[in-house]
Length: 122
Image 1 (cartoon, one colour):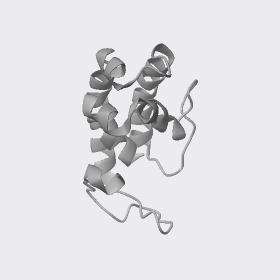
Image 2: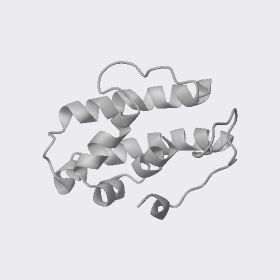
Image 3: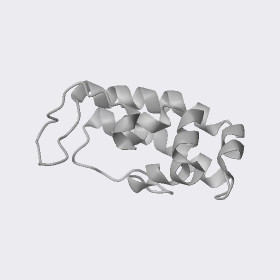
């Protein structure tokens, strides 16, 4: 989820880096296209809340933007730049606690204050 927030916080650049299809779809790997966010035991209350705040905006964008719109047309809607500051705020909440190890299960994140570089995910 943190990687997704990292990209979304880049606004228009995220669309160019990811492509319109990935930009529109990847958030919904974690969240429903319709309805409220499902409970997730890995999230604390504050993390769940900031993601619940972002979810309706992502759902609205998804419902308003045609699937085959293309990068330039998606950027022209203004959605990526409206979402970027909200995604950045959500990412800061996650960074405060840190990042869980992806290789083993943990009760608390092992990587406190995680700051990623987008090149880690390409």
